[in-house]
Length: 426
Image 1 (tube, one colour):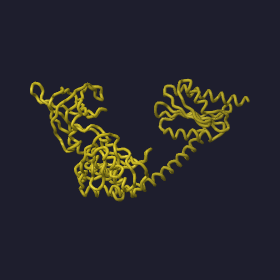
Image 2 (tube, rainbow, N blue to C red; image 1 turned 60 degrees about the vertical axis):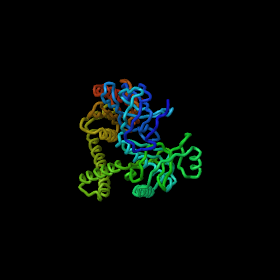
Image 3 (cartoon, helix red, strand yellow; image 1 turned 90 degrees about the vertical axis):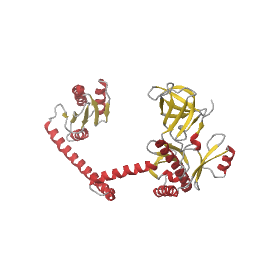
Image 4 (tube, rainbow, N blue to C red; image 1 turned 90 degrees about the horizontal axis):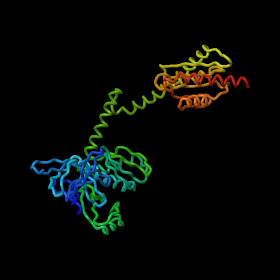
């Protein structure tokens, strides 16, 4: 099959075109629905490639009865043979003449991000000798992965500033073609940043006095059309550093969202945006202090309750067994109380259940003078009903459906009493 003429290579600003369907094949959508793929003799739709997503839009054609048929183009891909396939829901037979219309808002957004990536990658190389390993253009943000790093905050700000200065200078962005031999010579001379592993004619994108790079994607005509560049986040990845950035209207929307968040947060804290950082810092410090104070009070309360509980339960046959169920206290506190009760007096074992939710959480604890393993007893009791749990010799926990909690409590109680009786016999 003859390869499609790719109109976007010569004019990324082409929004409409005419062409002829050259092939049709059945396909399925992502939801398993019947769909079709169309090949064209010429197309302005960009297929997903090189980190840049595909274009969308529509075809219009005349049906056999003369009515205008509108067919949305939902996806565009290139196969291993270089054929560009357009994913549609309505079949158009080979030989059908169509008018194509590219979704311009989506296309121009991709152009801004892609040209911005070329610019950003070039500056990272020039300023920090950090080559770009990969590029991904996402729905909301884009990323480049750089070799090397980490980079100082001042260095990142400098790269961002230089990129926006070049955008403001509105330098030309041009396209040219060279042979593979010429491109290899340019790469060897340091005039190209990289060269794809393909033969034949090489398409070059040139940002005046900044960058020349082999690329088959769509681009703006001048840096001013990138419309501004904002570095969003920086994170370390296995191969180096990942830079998240936005360009053009994405940068405007991102800045607006950030401002709205600052305004809402400032209103909640009754402070101006310039005072937000110190205010949050102060609140965090106070929060940590309050957390420590609350923990101290919890410890004191647990010790007080534990002392009262052991006084209420007498020792029988060498064992003080304290059994309680609670619905209105948090599980972390019940765990703390179980531990504190067990150490409040000798010969004390504890079975506490937190019944605030289903499944119930059971805690088993003991004083150090008792010779049995809480984790083993609870683990074996849970295993009898097909459940899992356990812990240390001094403190164990496990979850059990509320309908089986009473039976588990009886099983654990019996096991503890047997263990204590056995220890007394030795």
